[in-house]
Amino acid sequence: MALGIYKQGQGYWIRLMTAVFVGILVLAGAAWGWGQAGAVRIPARTWTYSLVDTQLNNGNASVSGETVVLMGYVGASDDMQEIGRAVIEEFTPDRGSSSTLVIGSFDSDDTRDIAGDAERVVVGNPDSPTMGAAVRSATNTPIFPVQYLQTGVASTILLVGAIFLYWYVGVARRPVEFLIASDGEMKKVNWTSYREVKGSTIVVIVATFLIAGILYLVDMGFSFLFSAIGVLER
Image (cartoon, rainbow, N blue to C red):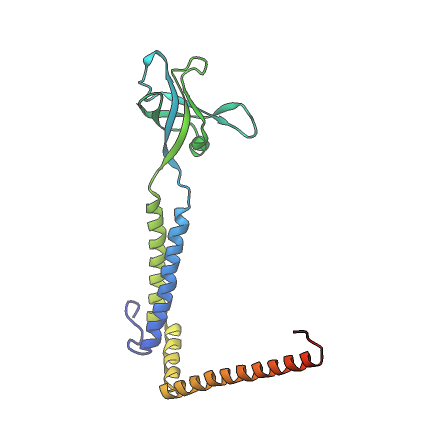
């Protein structure tokens, strides 16, 4: 019975509508989980810098594999300081003084997380660097796409919801007995016919307009009376 349906065929509509309602809640939960997972900041595998004012000493453009010093402003200090170090994975000189730099293998997790705050990069001795450049923009490449995390969270919610739904309306004795009993009680309800609903609706509409008309006449009568005795000014 654990893999079957308890009292299959009984309480069909109540069980079906319960499954639909819970299914909608599960889908809404999965959509919420997808959105929340998309806001998670996944650790970066690499950072890609768009550089300007690139200066290469001795015409050396082969800096891949070397250590780069990331410079930035720390706290309220007005002086640029070292915020961490990383290894250059790729360096691509562009036209003019601009270039692209890809870094990874950070010296610490903190450096990896704040690498996007770098304002300048220096390769080699800061006094006579092999390369120096200002950071125009920085984008990170996470260790895995955020869509993987979103898919995992949404799939987990859907799986848990499906298992709960199957247990609640399919195999759990007490909930199923309650749903079957509810279905039996619903069959005893004397539902109002279409003609009765239509007649009651017409009566309500007519009564509403009559009461509104009576109140309007009473209001106009009092307004005329108080104006005639000088209580109200027109």
